[in-house]
Image 1: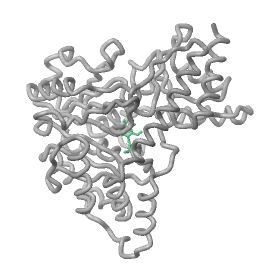
Image 2: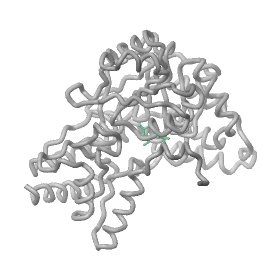
Image 3: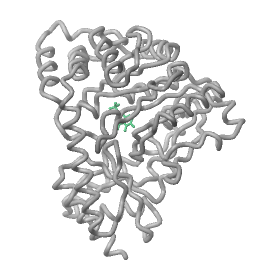
Image 4: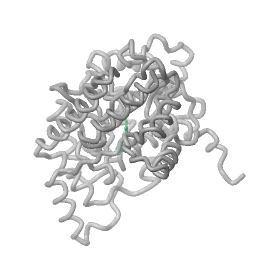
Length: 390
Ligand SMILES: Cc1ncc(COP(=O)(O)O)c(C=O)c1O
């Protein structure tokens, strides 16, 4: 056996299976509409592209950079948090750049976990929360997120012995895959729980700027005392359509940031300088592109949900994120079976809810990652599909 034993803790990714199914559907002559991956399809703002282009032509920008992030980027992050969330951050102690939020979510465990430590993870939740913890030798305690509780964890349901062993709790609002949001009151409750049980909270805020109908997402750090117990992870991937650039940042608790810096500086160097400059330009504004981006997703959401409703499949309209978390009609007990059949028969690819944890059973995640026209067409095909099974 060549592979390390720790790899046995990982399950094969669902996305490679969906990819095989997509290829099979194409080979069978279907026109595939892919709503499975959460990769933004729209363009970054013009001033960001210009900054990147200009910086890429300067040959002095091709050397190694420090893990920290350049001062221009840290200043932009500091100002972004002040402007958007009225939160003050110390650029050297409380901010660290990341190669996308995924980098932070994978490495935070190496920085904080000891063998046997428990991680409280959302179920359903974004897969790196689980895989990162398992690779670092942690133990998982999935917190069920149920519709009747607004897809929020119930802290009083977590057994006392689990609380004692827990070192980190992952939260993610707006949530992937649930498209659920959290209030300031919920984060206050989370801070109190973390304080009482000596747990570090890591809030994944990757979808911070994607909100609809005038709703504004709450930053975990807006809550009093949050910085004492946790960190927030942020990304330019979705806000500015820069997913391939691999730029994110982790902010908040000084001790966590310093542990992360130690891990990351031993693993790698910093991010390509032109990308850091482009990220700073994005965060510095102008901000109108952020609203336009969110509005485009809102229109897509409406196109999809309204069309599905015409086929009597009523799914909730999310207030945020770039997904619709659709409860399956009663005729479909298995989300894996639904997604496979749908792709095979109609060419529409969605993700079965169980790809994100057992509590995802009975749901599918539909990504708003195609034009309004294609989403309407996909909804028509999905509607006809469920009607054919009634
Ligand atoms: C909830 C959530 N967190 C983090 C990420 C990773 O984003 P990135 O590494 O591009 O910042 C994603 C990507 O889809 C996500 O959905």
